[in-house]
Image (tube, rainbow, N blue to C red; front, side, top):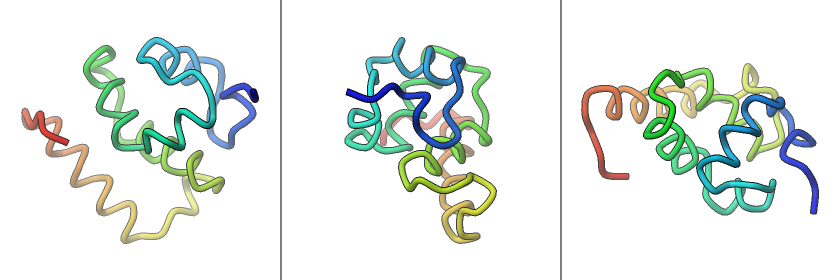
Length: 90
């Protein structure tokens, strides 16, 4: 099984946080998806921000987070804003 840090955009700190929320492998991240992973991380680490969500989506898609399509970034920003404003459903 590959290490989370083998994924694009995932460094040691992000891998540690993902593991703490029950996502311990690239396969687990791909299965959960970026939004679910971010939702879990936000619950345990309230300081995670939109850039973390972009990085997670980039990791799942195997692209640099800066290269995500504009529409994808807009969708992810909406999700992040929803959580920041007290949303709890996924």
